[in-house]
Image (cartoon, rainbow, N blue to C red; front, top):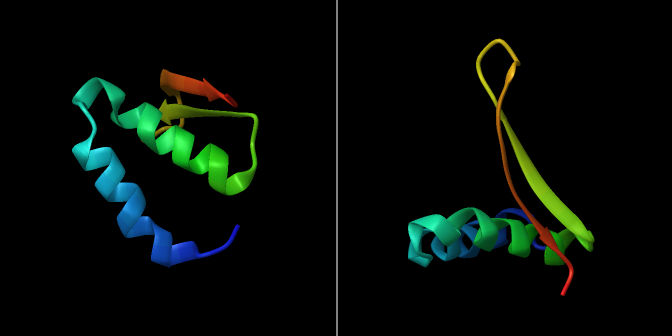
Length: 61
């Protein structure tokens, strides 16, 4: 992973400029490329650690 913090503003801008329903996909795609992953997904948990939602996954194109 290169760039670290310097890429965070670009990542946040991508999320902010995407349509609301596409924001998670925009962040997932950016992370997939930066980390060289084949899939990225987000598991949202509450304050006790219990799963609340499993958000979008993106596959390598």
